[in-house]
Amino acid sequence: MSARLLYPPPIENAIARIEPLLDTKNRISRRSLALLLLQKDPILRAQLQQEPYFPQIERIVVETQSCFVESLSLAIAQSRHQFTTAIEQDITIQPSKERTSKYEWLHQLTVNPVTGIPILLLVLYFGIYQFVGVFGGGTLVDGIEGFFESQINPVVNTIVAAIFPWQVIQDLLANDYGIITLGIRYAVAIVLPIVTTFFLMFSLLEDSGYLPRLSLLLDRLFKTIGLSGRSIIPLILGLGCGTMATLVTRTLESKRERIIATLLLALTIPCSAQLGVILGLLSQEPTALIVWASVMMAIFLGIGFFAGKIVPGNTSCFYMEIPPLRLPSLKAILTKTYVRLKWYFGEILPLFILASILIWAGKLIGVFDVIVRGLEPVMLWLGLPTEAAPTFLYGFFRRDYGAAGMFDLHSSGILTGQQLVVAAVTLTLFIPCIAQLQFMFKERGIKTTIAIASFVILFAFSLGYILNQVLTIMEVSF
Amino acid sequence: MITQGFSICYSPLSMLTNKSQGFITAIRNKDEKIVKKLLAMGVHTGMQITLEQTFPSFIIRVGRTRIAIDKEIASSIKVRVVSH
Image (cartoon, rainbow over all chains, first blue to last red; front, side, top):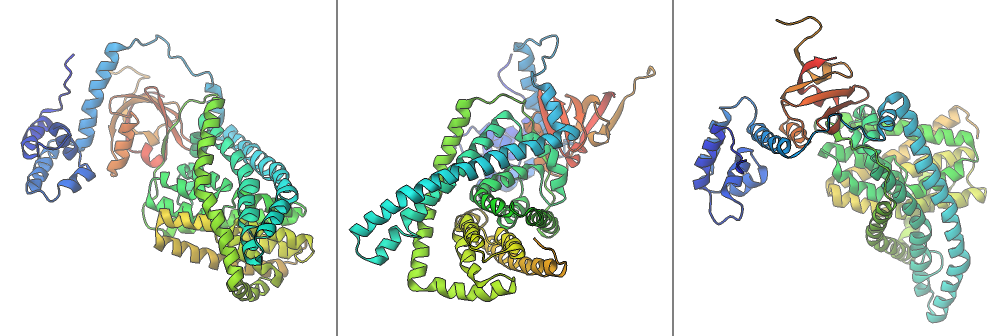
């Protein structure tokens, strides 16, 4: 078989005419470059834009295109495909009967909406809620956090107090907001177990081939909120960690889809740390939990719907290859989880330490007191006690810290019933943590980040106000 | 002569019923990027295609590949139907 792939004559002619025009010093063969130009490769075109011979190439491309009904890329791809198919048929033997995958029946169950939707709900309930939320965020966090509080923190406090006689330095390293006692403790005791369980589950779903099936089931629903089925992956990741999810939005197809997903992540999706505390707090009052969940769901769909109308650009298309379902290998899952954790801590740990330093500096120079006093009228406006103000401020440094502060207020009896729901909704909507904000800035640029952040702050407090009024008028009691 | 019970028609994939089988006669979309993606996933004119599901998304099988696509992309694949 001839090793050379020949294209239809008009294309071969065009190649022959373009080749002599091109520089010989390029390391890529001129034939390949000519083919790329015929396919209107944007990168190569940008490189050659300034060359004197570029207009002539343009003319050749246009002339060649006029010989075909379909686009030149299509014609070229077609020739290549025919060529490879011929090779394939030459060297392979077709089994007389197509062998179907062992898990074909499972595939049918997962993609048929009648059985697929219940399976989807079960996967989310057991995989995310039970395993990550209850086991990782509850059992493991309580254990490690308790160990830190009772064993490590007192020791650190004593040692730091013994070495540094100055209260200021002591507070930087230890005590309530120190780098070791708050920053490292958060990273190891709260974030590590939650993120580990989440990444384990995510790698399992990924390797089994389930995620594309999840996407195809939800594509139609997501189209109504300006997204495509593809976006379910960052949004689910957002239930683990909004920061990581913001990074993953770069896998989405269009700029429009990336902006909408970033906004929804910043506004409506609670991260696992926050979710854990809020669920724990509200589950004592089932009505409160239902109100919180329905309000969040309504906002997710509503804001998505309007964002889909407002953000410019076309509705994104959805296409995804569906790999066969497979039993994942344990080793692959563990390796993936390990690599992700390593990346995560490399990125996140410095930010935790930075947050500790900022809280320390803010308290030291009194900026925090000013901000807290500024927030107090806002709290009254939401029908919340003024004691809730610091919770909102610290919530910016760590989302879960805000929710944890709410927990303290509730157990000391300051925050009750209706206030609890209003505070939970407002805090969930409220600005993402400092790390997520930084990644929004990295991924979306300063203008979009400022626009999203100002919208989120304004929306969170306005909605808190409205919710408080509505609950008061409707006399809902918790 | 065309025998009864056997019909030939050209139709966008989005109009076909579940489990239809046929051959791809053309791929046309105003967005060149989508055509390229389909080609990259191995969807070419002349290939045999099976429509496995139409709701909530379209699932097609081309060669040994299974692909989920939305209605918009499905309508850009034209098919000569061989059997329903």
